[in-house]
Image 1 (cartoon, rainbow, N blue to C red):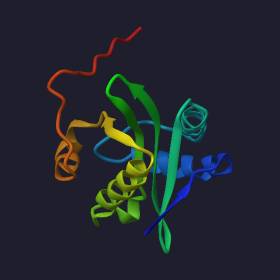
Image 2 (image 1 turned 90 degrees about the horizontal axis):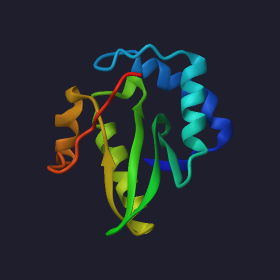
Image 3 (image 1 turned 135 degrees about the vertical axis):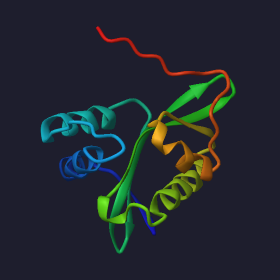
Image 4 (image 1 turned 120 degrees about the vertical axis):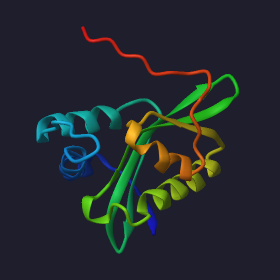
Length: 142
């Protein structure tokens, strides 16, 4: 498997994959081509952006996020981890996380943060992630 940096010209076809994947269980989110493209484009242009397409002969998925400086070192926020539908439940998500971690270590990143759907908690725990005891995610509709 190999990582390849995401370029701006990749965003349109990645948004199609994103839309397809996140309309399925467990998310069932109503993404369309416009909203998914705008979402990935905004992320791409964020400060500290890092994104990789992941290949194993063919495109398996992608991971995108941003670096953030914290008082105790550099952190990486995973904003999106997307495994193509046909490759889900085959261990590729774990492999993508492992490749990402190897790449981030070379960049002296101290840790990885993310928020996820409750149904994916076990997936991330298997990869060594733990719920933070001090932080929670809050939301307010406006």
